Image (tube, rainbow, N blue to C red):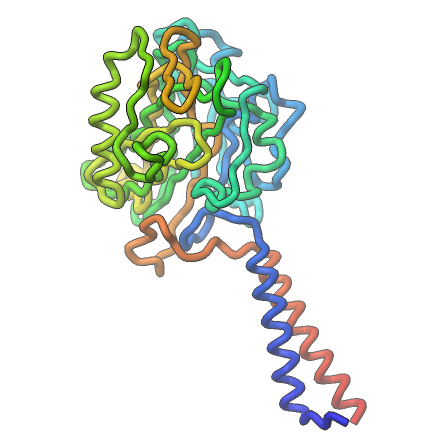
Length: 365
């Protein structure tokens, strides 16, 4: 007979409970890497009327969407959610942990000088690939309808969208991360390049550019490499030298504040990310996405600029208020995700289980 002493049994119970809690935490959905007081997520395509029947499937993820396909082909600041126009065209971002208001307001605008400004195509959306930076930071939070909601595109070359965040705490630092994914190759698949910039009117505002530029777009498929060459060109081919120069400039300065822009390619292995954003006294900063290289990729080295002149736009983003104890903040590798209420509930349940076990043993003696 194993005559384990009560204190040893208590330690054993505690150890088992701890292992259970760690396992529960490890199985939690992947979230924005870093230490945060809160994180808010927004699906920037799902709120369009065309997708109102397929809303986000994850609780506490908003769907504020701007769509010129509804308002017209030029300029608009009309914001939609669940297929309905948002009052005042300003949305309230909510904490992913519990759905409460963060106090941060969100608005967006699109300015287009082309035939059309932005639209959504349900046949283009692609899910996140396991093991990529985008998956590690967004994981299942994008929801099962992310691909169904399709891709967000800046059509016909000449449009700029601006996402603006207001009522930020000027004494705190924030993180912003965003992605856009499309199917590869073929008609309208994998649109051209968009240039994404952090706009902060306050000159003292700081940040770190921790963007992950797609290895697919680099020579030899190496992350952070020089932009690979393309075998075909078109009427926008004159942008290629500038794109090459600026792409290489970004990769040479990641992890610093030397460049306030990066490129979004529509592949699931790259992600826009700015950390330690200091909004300054006005409590405002913006993210600007502008068409840079419109076209489509017909193959690994075949950039078709002869038709279907489209480039991708941000279709999912996260905004996080960095924890004060995080110090200088994350540099891309990060630490842990924000604990969800379920983690605390599980912890309390484990402690209660330990108390009941000990109480029962005392009665049996």
